[in-house]
Length: 73
Image (cartoon, rainbow, N blue to C red):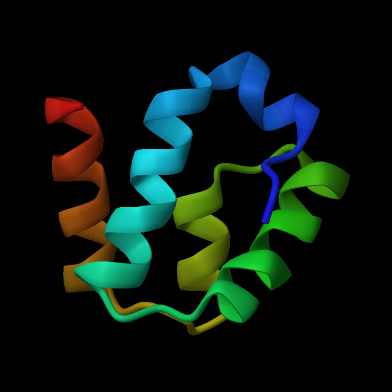
């Protein structure tokens, strides 16, 4: 799975790849679920964590975990 070019501008590639790994390994989110949200990111320019939450793929606690992880990344 390759991150979109627009997302790369917002977040360095290695950090983005680490985020994808965190979503998959720590939050048990499938790469297919992540890909659904990624397509919306490309269209709406919304942040990936918020789109995952809006689609019901993560809950509020997991959303907080993602933003906590991003602060430390």
